[in-house]
Image (tube, rainbow, N blue to C red):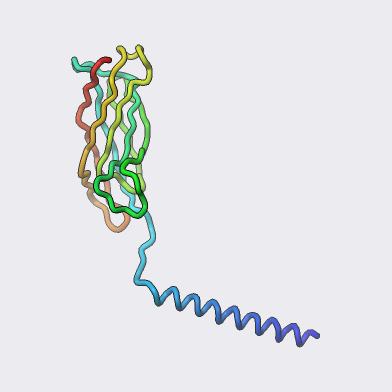
Length: 158
C-alpha cells in the first residue's frame, strides 16, 4: 500500500511540475520586458491668499489636486484627482510637502471660505492651475523634486 501511495504522489508531483513549467514558459515567451513600480517625486507647494486689498485671509480651505489635460491614461478616466486639503495660516499662506505617487504635471488649487463671517467676512471661491511642473534630479520611477510656487490668489467678498 505504501508503494502505491508513493507512485501516486510521484505522478501527481510530476504532473504539477510539468504544468508549472508550461505556464511559466508561456508567460515569459509572450511579453517583452516589464517595469514594476509607481512614478513618484518629492514636491512642495506654497502659496498665499489675500482679499482684494491685499490683506491675508486665514483659515481658508485649500484643496490641491492633479489636473489632467488630454490624457489617454488607462488608469484614470477623469481629469481631476485631489491630493490633499490644507488651510491657510494667519498670514494667508498655505504650504505642503510630500513624497507623492503619480506626481502632478499640472496642479489645481481650489480655495474655499468655509468659516462664514469669521476670518474677515465671506469670500467667493477661486481656483488656479499651475501647468507643466518640472521635476529635477530623478531617474527611473523617481522623477525628482519640485518646489511649486503658486501665484497669489485674491478673493472677492460675497
